[in-house]
Image (cartoon, rainbow, N blue to C red; front, side):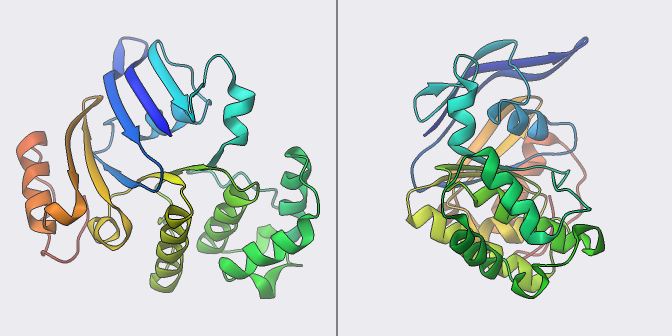
Length: 244
């Protein structure tokens, strides 16, 4: 569903993505890790049609992101560092606004179901400006899923979430994968990878340098591979938890 071929992106004299190859199939949850500056956010923004590649191609469900970005945007849900919410609107008003952008019909039931799914039922009439970072992140997740996209692109989506909210998101992503969604998320939290992902890829210097099914590697082995490829003195982790 997500297919990237020889993707390159340069900012000034700095090549951020270099002939990158990546695919995410139906029902897959792929965790993308890499040190700061590896190109994770640039890749997500390029997949989301927010940045145009200098070379190579990206296809979502067989549709080119450069030739038909409007169709692609209807097939993707995106969560970036910025929540893309209107602080002076209420929780429900934000979702109603986005439903109009997608020309969705009969949205009230869907909005209610999504707010329940992200545990914001009790705050539907509250302005987003009163929300904590974690609450805004949960609402952003609901916004990304509002139009029932077939692909989800999530950049550090677990940032700001407490343990309960993270577990809730784990369950949501697993359910979406069961429904056939293709999901790509970036993270620095190794525990999240083994809680929810089906595959883990390491991005380094603009290329995917390692890829493995999650059930074929242990957290400690993954961390050792990460150190081996990146030659970075990252913080040591225990086999069951830590950060990359």
